[in-house]
Length: 226
Image 1 (cartoon, helix red, strand yellow):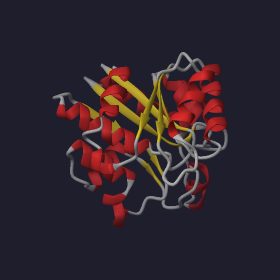
Image 2 (spheres, one colour; image 1 turned 120 degrees about the horizontal axis):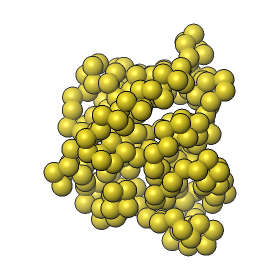
Image 3 (tube, rainbow, N blue to C red; image 1 turned 45 degrees about the vertical axis):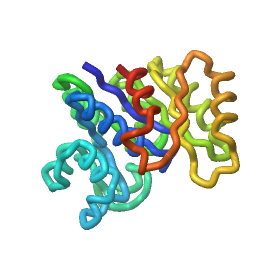
Image 4 (cartoon, rainbow, N blue to C red; image 1 turned 90 degrees about the vertical axis):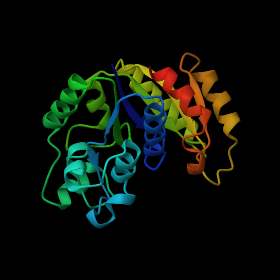
């Protein structure tokens, strides 16, 4: 049984892109795989199919129905903000203990492969006193970190890896996801990260949706996560 938490160095870094690619890879290999994105912001029911939740459900081969949306993402908010801010706008909140219990139950009942996608970067606030990092620390399952090749990604990535190490979290793989229109070379980014984090496997990924099921990088990521 495999349960992995997918996090990133920031928002719009490609976490859903990676999770969807892994789902398709494992399903094509005959594996049973499920995915959750328990907390989502910027969610509009009328555009659910194009949302991160809709993308994950499509990869899982499931219909984008209210029941399926609720199953994989119970905490959804309209404003495209951090969960604490988005929830506050609606007079709501993310109950951290309930979120952890929801995630732990999913891990405990997992029979093959489960991917839990976080929200934003590792230090995104969930409520007034907890961050995504606290969520990961409570679960203590292996982690995959997604970063980009944008200018500044090296500092963001090394900071992320440092705080994960301080909380005793096991980073299985660092995925360097190509940032569109970046002036920074992907291979140079990878080489620098390997100098500072030599014990963590690094996989380069071209962010090309047309090659989502064909890219050998997903097979490499999957092997590292098994």
